Length: 299
Image (cartoon, rainbow, N blue to C red; front, top):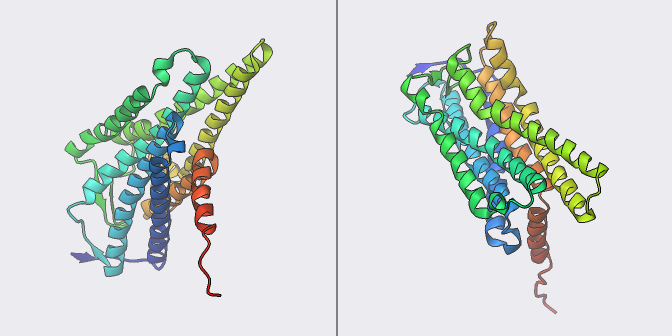
């Protein structure tokens, strides 16, 4: 194992990333347990929330493993690639894709319930679970070709295993599979739903139908806000990818990008809690039940 240069800001930022990821894992677990054990959360819409929480939990754990590996090497000031380094990179691509597609499924479901309310088969829990399973299968399969062509390598300066940022087929392929396709589809669905709901306002529409459509539109708008948070914090990574096509990029580009990506995961979990009323009510109910317990006092 060779020694390596460790800048003064490496370890503080490694610790910051660890803290963010631990919070994200705790939030995801709390949300999942509340959805599982509270019967008021056993609805189709909450299936999607649980799927997003599961994807966030796996993603945060993968990123936590990557951060611990980086911190250990930084503390020891060594260059070292462990046996799980490349596998963690693979799981990073898998969990990122599953996380983004979990929001796409929410948008699709709400669009179908508004535009095709009579097609109950496409709104059933069985169909949604099938679609969730398909997205997870896709997430696990799409990075496999990369494993066979050795695109994932150990980056010494950033102490991470990733595909190098440069103009390459895999980088474009991965960006489309993980980021561009789900986000573009979410925005397309949102715009289509906005136009559809506005059209309902100009026609004679039952009040209940219009109210339901407006409520679903608000939920899709919240999904757009969630992916906007991911876009804002993921902008440094996107910028470095774009720069790599034309010029050299900073030496520690992955370190910088992953600081923002780790913050984005915990930020989205907080926003998801704020936007999901059944989940918020379930957790607040449990908190209130605990605070209302009267402790015996000594007379």
